[in-house]
Image (cartoon, rainbow, N blue to C red; front, side, top):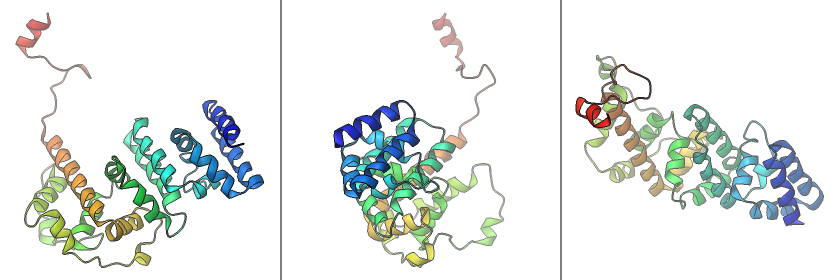
Length: 256
């Protein structure tokens, strides 16, 4: 029965009928019980699981999201990076898809993270998930809250075009090593205070229960900020045809 369901579901997915594929899986749970659907999901190819769960996120609940195992979910979600979507589409989709499974019950966040941190791409996926919230993650790491106290004098000082990322990176480069600095900071919030079933709660669980991975995540975030700061300093290319690199005179001769 399992292989037949998998085959039929696969055919619906290939035909682009994702909603019908999800409905087909729901029938299994209704007729055979949740345990039967769990067995089917565990045997499905991760890319097929992803095709279903990415269509049914926190805003569109599905029994698949409620029953997929953390192990199978992680195998599926790491494939999300390979779709090559523009970041403005990729990040919200990734976050919504992860939230739908990680926050389906209070224990799920730690269960999913436990599997994710063992994956080679786990830290990079987490850094993608927290995109747009790097300031808050750094504040949590070094101040124990999501919003660090503001130095008003510094905040209103004149700033250059590459200010915020370069300044924060420079500050974090000074003083203690990252691990030591984080270890000395006490988190000043309880989980109930940040229980948003979203990135804040995820960050809290990561900080409390996966401290080593949290440190690696902060290193990854700082590395991304370094690269963003360096990219901001790069001079703009001279005007020319879009997408066509400008050649030096010597290069032009050799190209001819």
